[in-house]
Amino acid sequence: MVQPYLFENDEHAALRAQVRRFAALEIAPHGAAWEEAEEFPVGLYAKAAEAGVLGIGYDESVGGSGGDLSHMVVASEEMILAGRSVGTTVGLGSHAIALPPILRAGTDAQRARFVEPVLRGARIAALAITEPGGGSDVAALRTRAVRDGDHYVVNGSKTFITSGVRADQVTVAVRTGDAGHGGLSLLVIERATPGFTVGRKLKKMGWWASDTAELHFEDCRVPAENLLGGEGAGFLVIVQNFAIERVLLAAQCVAIAQLAWEESVAWTRERQAFGRALTGFQVTRHKLAEMAMRIAAARALTGEVVTRVQRLGDDPSLAGLAAMAKNVATDACSYVCDEAVQLHGGYGYMRESLVERLYRDARLYPIGGGTREVMLEIISRTSGF
Image 1 (cartoon, rainbow, N blue to C red):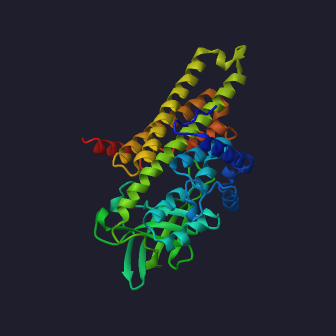
Image 2: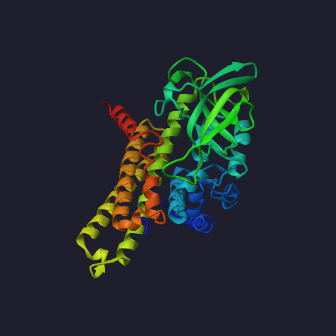
Image 3: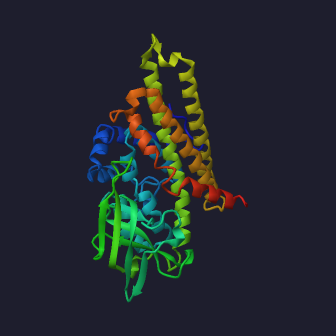
């Protein structure tokens, strides 16, 4: 049984039930097959929108279902727990990192054009920041956009882009100015734009159902009206977006660890060894207790960050605390999934086992959204040393 976050109320409980029904009906029966196929049906976006799931956390004025970060965290957890497919969950939710920059820096016309269709399930949105020549050093990105009349001419490449293969629109970090963070801007680039091509569909260790791509821009002419905010305003928006993304990643880790733990409890209660269930051995009970303890700690810190966002908004302390939550949650998730495979023995190493897949899925989290090492640097800087 999942312990609710302390910020939860009756509204969150109703939301959990709503998302649980959707995920159990639309994802769980097919999730394993979709992971093997390395994609889920595009029609799932429309189904999620119709069920009111896709728009959770977005204001009704832009076509959302209402709610805030706390509702997004709860919904994400239930999608993983009930849907049992991390790849499907993260692919379906790629708009959670692609749309906030548009909402934060865009005009009303841009919101109507680029946000509402996505929340209706009519378009797929992705975020493109990482480049082949660099990872977490956002300020060093090289994809350049040069103003030419009513357009920007974009040249460069992006990689590791979630939903990049099928995205109809991509929120792209580009360099419009000099070197450093001050020269960064954000453009929304649509699939049909001449000069924009999708490269390889990347093969990954985990998250198989979520497509990941390389993107290329060669003399790609993007209407200037697609610029979010002014030139040079991109870095602050990116940093603010990263903080919220890291909270959501932490919440996903808590959910994955919870699912792996629940699978382990059920397995060790049923599995017999030397004439008794595995839970009859102290070593097994202590493993399960250690797993539960680490999940609880990660849940508590993640919930603390969400509560601070609700009360303080874009407070300067958010970046450091979000980095802490991400590291604590990713550490817990990695540990729990590893122990889950160990408790399942040989079956835990088989592709037919859910914990085998969760083990692979978990490995991305200390890397994606900013590596564990970068999180430590953020923590040290925001702590004043």
